[in-house]
Figure (tube, helix red, strand yellow):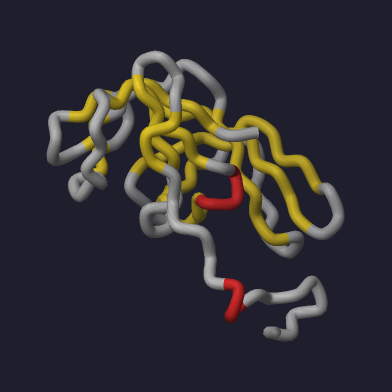
Length: 130
């Protein structure tokens, strides 16, 4: 499910307890939460924030990682390729892919969703591009 983190929007940037997005999209309503889908974040040696791996779950074609981030009350989840293995307790960086996040106002209504991927460059499960 989507990772939901409380945030503030000052019209130019979005601030959460753990990270800041400096080039935020312009929205009409005040932003109260940011949502990041587990497949729209990337784990690497460095990132916009640091997390600690709590649980690593192998599911076959991909793995799910449950992460603890300082300043964020809820555990975050990330999806990683099947070949990527992470040890519980290790620290890892997290980055958001482009503007692949959702913004919600203080009432929980969506005020921004990322652009949909182009249907011209869709990768099938076998790896070929259509």
